[in-house]
Amino acid sequence: MKYNVHTLNNTCRICKSKNVEFFLHLDNMPFTDDFVKKENTGSEFLYPIEIFFCKDCKTLQTQHDVEIIDYYENYQYSVGASGFAAEFMNGIAKKIYDTYFPNTSNIKVLEVGSGDGGQLVHFKALGCKTLGFEPSSYLVKVAAERGIESVHDLFTNESIKDLPENFREVQLIFLSYTFDHLPDPVGFLKTAYQILDKQRGIIIIENHDAQKIFERQEYCLFEHEHSIYLTKQTAISLAKRNDLDVIEFDVLPEEKRRANSLIFVMAGNNSVWANQAINNYDLPGYDKLDFYRQQADKIYKGISNFEKYIDEKTVEGKTIAGYGAGGRGVMTLAALKNSNKLQYLVDKKTKSENVCAPKFHLPVYTIDRLKSEPVDEVIVFSFGYMDEIKKDLIAMGYKENQIHSMLDILKYN
Image (cartoon, rainbow, N blue to C red; front, side):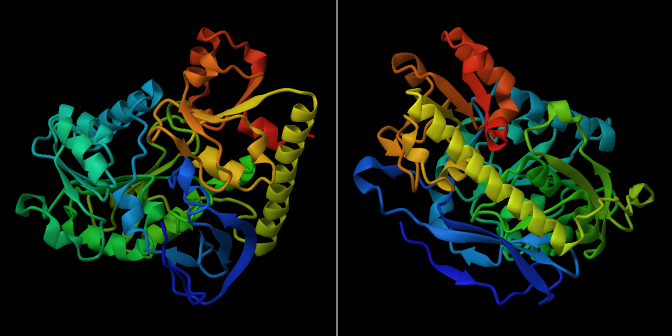
């Protein structure tokens, strides 16, 4: 499928400054979910990903947009097969409800990018009224089967008119790994604030944490789908620029969150929560361009380490498979020159039969393939679910020393 790319004119997505500087380049990268039938390999979208730093507001971002309505229409990714993810979604719903709305009825929750309704199910179980906003017709259908009503569309600055009358004021707006997909995050916040209960309403955002991206060299999280990359520091700054305050970070302890999860709660700066505002978060180095150039060099080294590992193991005659056909697996391998030396990719929930990953064209199967066509080593890209994955693989007969996190491979020497 072809997608129309247009480049922004070096203007920051957050503060509109032209003082933005490039520091990282990944050549000819695909969309994370643009899987292709074997007979159609070579037809998928590929385009460079370049990451920029705004010297004024310090926000990391891409400077290109891709018109991707068709892409999201066919999007099928969900984490519904993971017990850990279900536990996380139940835990965050309960913690939010107990902290901000205890013993309160008629709480309305709007989730933007609601997927298959997995998160809203847990809010609904607490007695909240729920509504999703989701561009994938497939996921809207799955959500409906779970009893979750959704508006089938991308959320834009014009989306208020698409909301039912009884959802023109809500107490909670929730976005899980969606906010950083928005090409105009400031426009979204202005639109969201229009429908937010001005006294008690909160906006909760779960994003990838840019600090963790660099600590772990997770270049795989730089994607065409992502427009911005926030730290706690830049989340506070973004909120304040839009008459909001960050009033809480993380909500759940790290061991109960997903692999790279920055969660922050925002409220209007005149709300009942204003006295809880977090005004600063000290993060030395993350406000300097030279720091990011150094991180880019580490990322390039990590890519080289990964290629070296694959070359050495395959020369030894070992076979390798990848576990995790989500963004981490696809984008990690897409940056490598030798990813085709792996045997295949597996996931608990594949897109469909007879598909290959974009760009490097490894076939993608369910995890049963690891039993029917065993390999010597498994590289786990979905490392946030490592305990769960190890348990499944050990039950298949794999030993723990055959199962490796992608994070360890990036540091291979």
